[in-house]
Length: 293
Image (cartoon, rainbow, N blue to C red; front, side):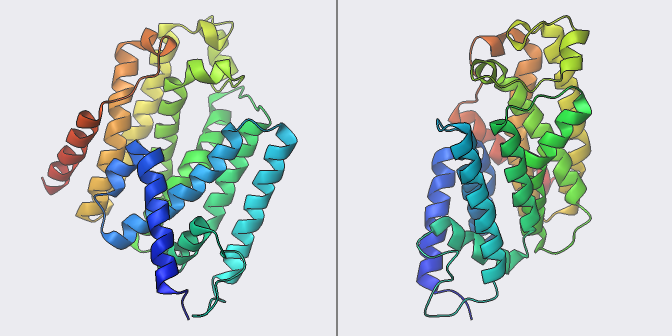
């Protein structure tokens, strides 16, 4: 039997509110989806936001690692309880936790690959431990964990779940968007003691520290990100129109930010680049037209 319908509906509303409030770029895309897919995407985002907030919080490292371990245990409990719900009581993994309830219902509807969320936790744990990356290939592994994993979950929701040959393309888009995030946030990350740009690239372009990165290095990394977008966007052709529009809306915002970074790389050392709400809405509307064409 399923979980109580009112509890599930309440939980999805809470997840959608988290997504609307915390992830404007993500939300512009998912609101183009049908209701069930939009709810499932919100549940995935709300859990990912919770994990990211642990990594970005002010607690000391041991407390953060303990909190991440608790989320691993929560995922394991959700996987166990997903087949043991009944109409009168919520499973122990979900009781009182709107995000867990939403995620459990999305798992049942779309056969979500929960191992992708475990990979997300792995990636955030790398952040907590202050991991740095010697090569670009090392950085790609991290990007796959924190963003490619979300791409694979999105594909499961777009296509109805189960094994899917398009997961690799979604993973590529996740890497592209994470690389864009890294370039956009390079100054803020450095101020918080985080360095994502590969050490070999810093040396290659004569940059002794991320605080002294050159425009040439930023443009070089931007070209790499653009190549990952070009590969991953082949996913759109394999999706239905509304799912394809969602992908184009989300990636369109990131690609526009990437264009600005490549055009004015010095700007990211002065302030965080973002797009105004009207431009995000315009990109979302254009994505609908693009898929229909």
